Image (cartoon, rainbow, N blue to C red; front, top):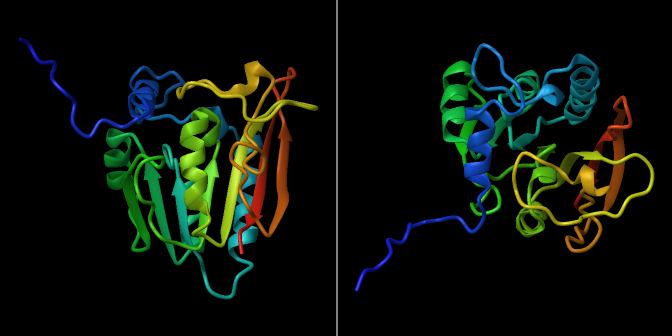
Length: 223
């Protein structure tokens, strides 16, 4: 009787394979480095105001914060924030990308981790940055991540949302796509996530052309 081989330590969701395919097959575009996290991480009209808002937030504290960047991607944005933090912990699920970032970006207060944020324990810190990450995850994964966010004082989430009214949190299969085609987007305060916060403040909203939705950044104060 034959026995099928069991893959040990297999994650319950296929996100790692999906994200590795994104970079291997250059599904979000390409540049000279071979790792490209999409136009949303490189277009100046999107990136410049976002970085400015984050710098304003980070420099508003007398003591610099320890920041945990979940889904740091090619680090085109993170590299502009490191100097304003006590420590910058950059996390991504793609091992080759993290290996590249470790060689390319070096600072005394910067550390990279290769982790599946839905499965692994997260680095400790004061502030979480989740920039256009949750939108690619299934509801089961998002719920797992949200449960961990209560351990941080501040959570800054950026999501690509439809224009106008929409039904939040329609489920998808993890991958390069998002909920926009379902006229949906992620709202962590709504069911099934029900993220409990003390205060939420919209920091930034950028409307894309051709009715392609808007990119919204929200600060959540947890306690």
